[in-house]
Image (cartoon, rainbow, N blue to C red; front, side, top):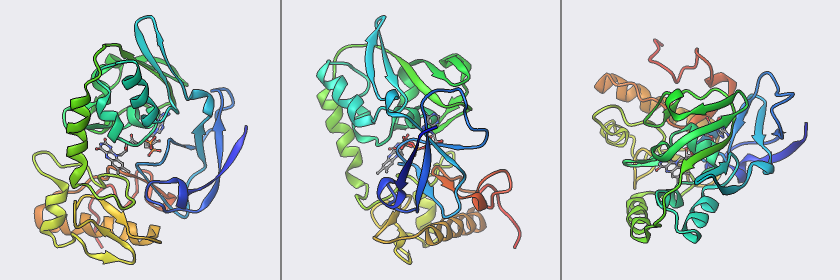
Length: 275
Ligand SMILES: Cc1cc2nc3c(=O)[nH]c(=O)nc-3n(C[C@H](O)[C@H](O)[C@H](O)COP(=O)(O)OP(=O)(O)OC[C@H]3O[C@@H](n4cnc5c(N)ncnc54)[C@H](O)[C@@H]3O)c2cc1C
């Protein structure tokens, strides 16, 4: 299989990580047994000891209208989807113009802004294990149980691109930092906000090396320049520990931490542990 050398300190939205060889997935035959699939790394903190990585080939970067539905390839960037919808006057994808990622990553994460989520207009997906209708997939806020690489997704096609909506989404974004990050670091616990809890335990703006939870939005872990993995993961664990001690709430990571020390069912990030 083809590989590509990727410098994650440039490629990932966090601007953190080594240069690694990534295998390119051209088709589902010869799928390596153990791998972690990446999209455009807008929701990933890359560690120094990551698992073998896989990425969809460029051939999955396409958008087409077929049988009165919208078919989008798994490696299509969100910006391209937004431009296509604007150009062809297609509705319901306006929020995507402010959501960095590829189609595969957006669907896997059920990414969204407020009540606008990528699953809202989804019909089905095509994966390496076959076709799945929306009804076959368990999904909720920033979660799906999809276990196989998403190659393509089919969406309902409705016309009427809403420019006003784009402005609303732009406004929603205005309180978010432009410093490198991976968006929200933790999922919001039910009935509360991770950012509020981080602020309550005194971690908003506290620097560890060049990393901190942003002054502008406490749930954004940001890299102020040359930040590294160890400092990022220290802050993540410190936030989890302090919030648990004060509120008895365990903050669940929304970002994926790609380092074998922090992955799997024994990951120290998964649940409270005794020192
Ligand atoms: C500044 C900023 C703001 C953000 N704001 C938001 C927001 O408002 N709402 C929101 O929901 N997200 C937000 N995010 C997070 C990010 O936009 C989404 O999580 C997006 O879905 C990531 O897509 P990606 O292609 O970069 O995926 P990656 O970060 O590369 O991967 C994310 C997950 O998707 C899986 N994945 C990737 N491709 C595939 C595929 N083809 N098949 C199966 N699984 C796959 C990966 O294994 C991984 O678990 C923000 C990020 C940034 C940097």
